[in-house]
Structures are given as structure tokens and as C-alpha cells.
Length: 148
Image (cartoon, rainbow, N blue to C red; front, top):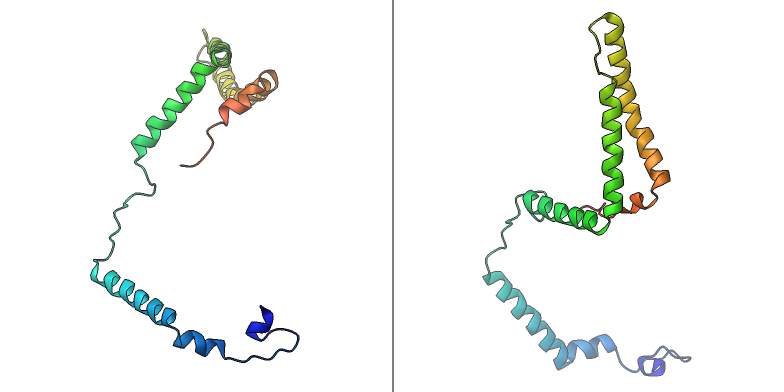
């Protein structure tokens, strides 16, 4: 095959293959087909952009789909759901009872401020404890972490 195109050991070409291609009927047919495609394409109206949002689907559809997925995940793993619910109830009671019968003195207000700042830190501590107690929660929480 290399000898036919003139690229063999002798490197002698008997024909100019570019000229052979330009004079071939296949080349003329190909150019006619391309010209036909171009003329037909120019007759069509331009394609208009109909997407006005930032995403391919509406926000409400995405929300419904993600909620359906999340509820299915909860349905498939009730132990995880109950442990998460129990942890939140216990945390809420713990934080709530710190304000039980608190007064309005300066010391009471300082205690309320301290509890409020501790509450912010409590969430991260509970989250790290939850990760160590329930390692499956990482999978359940991050199963749908994708952008739509």
C-alpha cells in the first residue's frame, strides 16, 4: 500500500493523488452534497433560544424530585431516620431546658448569650458524634450531592 501512494522505500509517486481526487466523480458528488446541505440549511429559519432560566428544568420540578428522592431514602432506612430524630429531640430538650425559668438579670442574660453561642458549637459537636456513631449517615446524607 505504501508503494502505491509513493511512500515506500523508493518514495517514488507515479501519480499526484491530490489531482486524482479532485478529478474523481466522488469528489464532485461530495461537493454537490455539501452545497445542497448548505443551501437547505440557509432556507431554514434560525433556531431561537427558548431557555430563559439558569437551569434546564424549573426550580419547582427540581425541588419535588429531590424531596421524593430524600423521602424514599428515609423510607428505605428507618433506623437512620429514628436515630436522627431522637438526636434532634434530645438536643432540643437540652438546649431548651437551659432557658427554663431564667431570669432577666445581667447574669441571666449573660447565661442566655453563653448558651446561644454554645448552641452554635453544639451542632458541630453533635454532627461529629453522629458521624462516629452512625457511619452510614455519611452515605445517606451525601447520596444526592449532585448539581442538576
